[in-house]
Image (tube, rainbow, N blue to C red; front, side, top):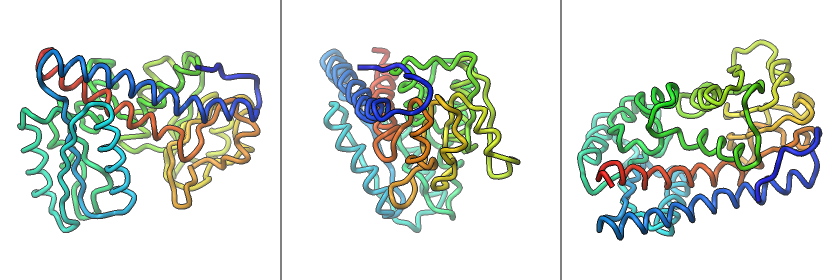
Length: 295
């Protein structure tokens, strides 16, 4: 069941609720998506299809893609996988993505990132047709997010907002600090919070006195990719902490053990926003199929 943010200061009860129910929120989303997929297939005779593209054999990326494929199948979504060698060029990757974009049997496309430093990742993302950008990584998707227009949200930020909704955390009027400014995580997270009437501050590697900025936050989004960068002593008592970091050793960008003593709600790593990311990806794939077929 959804929980409210609880009293100021972290409690083991609040932590347990978020860890357990956060996963439950994702499970319910996938279950609802599976029903929508089944209804869509019964109505149209078409199974929604998600194509995943992976460059190289990074173990973590291989694991992520396999997990997404397995959950797709459980949700009644067909999965097509394209594995490319690590030496794939930008041009070759772009060609693959454009081909998938024009394939009527494919409704959503996920390019697993990172793709390797030798590849122009932005050029690759922009080769994905906006109507199939179910991961929310293109310029078009960022624009629709920013202007509140119909489109696809970046999956991890979208999943974070779902968790806030599930716990009755209304961002309106609250001060949100986003630590990180990547095009597919930090920036869209801030725009989605801004659309909910939060007052948003972006912080990054050149922010002076990061701790002072974080201490002002009612909502903290950690999305910088530096283990335990945000310390518990910098968390405002009663703040909500959404940790999107995933670093070696299964640790996030927040020092979990100290932050939990002050936060009212906090997402653990692993098992916090990760399940919601996949749930939003699957939901948007079914939505994409319905839009493309006008059904």
